[in-house]
Image 1 (cartoon, rainbow, N blue to C red):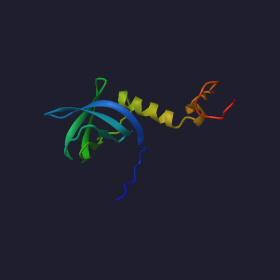
Image 2 (image 1 turned 45 degrees about the vertical axis):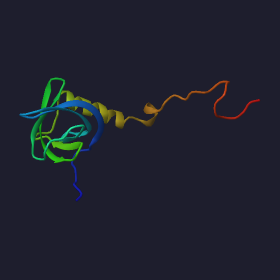
Image 3 (image 1 turned 90 degrees about the horizontal axis):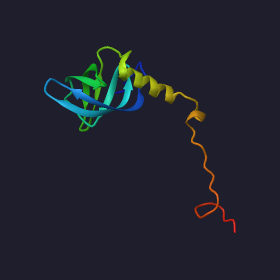
Image 4 (image 1 turned 120 degrees about the horizontal axis):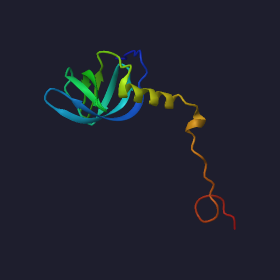
Length: 120
């Protein structure tokens, strides 16, 4: 089944705490949009109500699907402010930045061994 998404999912790496009435679990958001997140490192049963804690800010959600080591959480309201939204915007800006912005400087080897053309 293919689901049409209205928001672009952005790859991120955000350490969070997922809290339920009975438990608190550490996890990592690996992709994020305004409407939800994929969390790895912890799991809850599908249908569970939870909250994502990041830097003292809480975002509520419902677990839509769950596997052995990851789950998808849908937010009841799209995020539009707070630390989670700020991290999403930073990741989105980095993704859409020109390729030259991400390019690593080239290092030229001088003398010594290593790979390359023999000079003597």
